[in-house]
Image: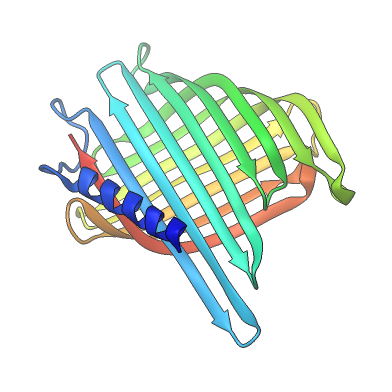
Length: 249
């Protein structure tokens, strides 16, 4: 129980920190920072046992005229019939540089992952590429990007065989966000990351969120996540629901 009380205190502190002050709805000439905390989960209790899943994400974004910076952390933890099913952590730092043609920009990324469900002991991805915005307005955002990533991984293969290896990946991403009358927000980010050395070595990551705004700073959110690491022959499909607290300043 003490560790759960400690987690509740952290969530309460983040709630107060994110909701203090006046909220804004988007980036503007005077609004350059955005932070959000998502806490969601699911519980399934039957005669045969209990399963639960917790999905917590913390985001911080900075956007200026020529550059933007995004920092995200995500932790998913779950148990089924008393056994751990998910203990997955990801942290990523990326930047975008707007110094060329309209709607076109360069990006760089550093991403660290560890995942019980996907059999990833450690994974470091780092690289750069180009991107293009088809739409970029307060209500509609659609972006496609591509680049090259260096992948240094420590994985668990079949029969608990540990595999430490390095490869270069092509990283293709489709990202979107639709804001409907400032009440409903649909957003998603989808990655296909193929190894340049083996066609059978690929990673799929897909996240889609549907949010209903209760206040400017508070939303009811459902999240659908799909991940596959073909090298470990592992995948997960996660559906959770909860609250998102955010602040623009």
